[in-house]
Length: 225
Image (cartoon, rainbow, N blue to C red; front, side):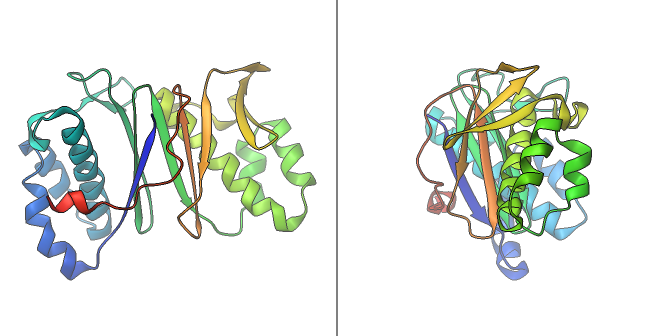
């Protein structure tokens, strides 16, 4: 089953209190990489994302959080070489850090909702996506824009292509209440879920697995354990 976890960033004082505890949950190379971030917000989001991921994986494997290493695909997507049955992906936007964990390849994206820039859609969306978006009433365009955007980003993160592939090389289509991904009119064997639960943000997950937890898990009390 695809599980989704979310944690909010802390104020600076609270972060400095928990930072030493969280850093001890990382192997040395991850500690060094985290310290290399000089921007406080970027450092905190990076640390929270990795700690959250490691604690989840530790619960599932029984291995201490600092005892396994992440490998990188040719496009830079992290994965667990020692646990091929576990897949994960991380995303963050402003004060939210989210992690998806699954038994098949998975990608996740979260974005803060603002008034969409339609020039971005015209540049990066496929022709069919643009046609559907521009026909919607103004009050529906914002929601639909962010649903398309987060699904497309989550799909590219699933494949590991990330920024190496163009967003307009595939099309996201809404079919009743669900969304599907097409390449050259061929439906891909990818399952998509839009998650509610984080007000003011849009969160989408794409996976080869077709079983999703209903809600985002924001109970991250296990981080303190």
